Image (cartoon, rainbow over all chains, first blue to last red; front, side):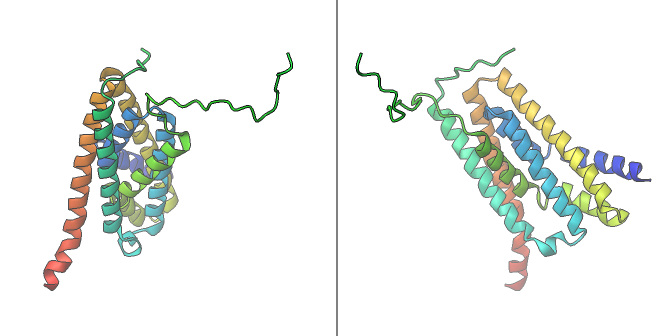
Length: 102
Length: 125
């Protein structure tokens, strides 16, 4: 029954992803960017690509891809984005011109 | 009225707003988000769950579709949550909080990766 497998995959992955570091990163990027459409498109594309890699590799992902090295690269990216955000908040703390529409 | 230059090389000043940060272009935001999320997601526990399901079921395509739908929904939730936070918090305050969160995530991710890499060196030494 493909639908049961589809539903169980959906539920498992969705629950595993709630509150995950990836989602926290998406919340951070979306909240501080003025282009939520681009953030959504980029994150959705990346997640679909990642799950494509995961499903295609089966159980042998860590033997194909150096996941620890990739995680280190991601950590560096997080540090760079985070420090840039902190610097920007310190530099432009006086201007919040675009008041959000209710 | 002799000087009516309709030449295309009339120097129009480019719209440079020096006081406000230039908004990043769509494609820049797209690629920076995609790179960050893709790198962070590989080797994640979601990946492991999808791998397990895929290996157990023997139907990788169904697992791929289900995982993709779930990930798209969760990223939509994340984007909407970020937009909502930006409406209830001042911009600079949200930027500082997001920056601190990202730095903390980066340190934690880096620690995880180093801890995974370290036992090999500890065993050999």
